[in-house]
Length: 69
Image (tube, rainbow, N blue to C red; front, side, top):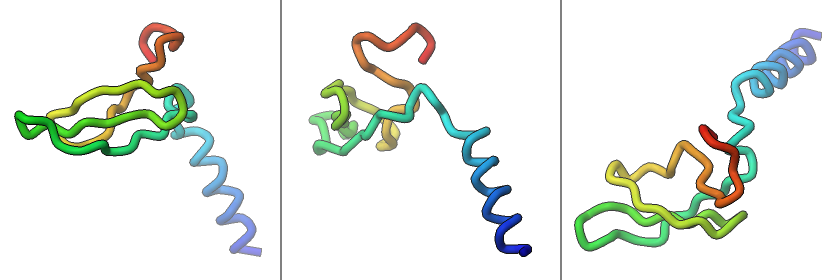
């Protein structure tokens, strides 16, 4: 019974804290740029970007994405 309650709680927390704007984004590293920055490409929409910290973008870069997402 405790396991079931724990699973339900975990599911609810995932729903609350998941970023809906990034739900469809699937960023994949494409290599390093000349200046040491990492290049990323979204497998869902094809958007491309470069980040300086080596982590995937935290915002959606789709051309039709609403502002602020």
